[in-house]
Length: 63
Image (cartoon, rainbow, N blue to C red; front, side, top):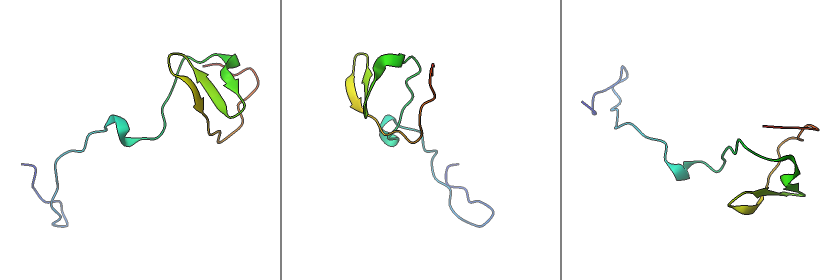
């Protein structure tokens, strides 16, 4: 069943599931406005984490 071929004759493998360590980013939906300090963000229960901002956050942002 797992080793059928597609229309080009390529063998198909088992499904690949998304593991925890596969991505270098994450979403933190509940964040307070005063948590940013320079290039670090203060996350509850985690502490200060280095932040890479790709774009500027708008004034008065909320999640």
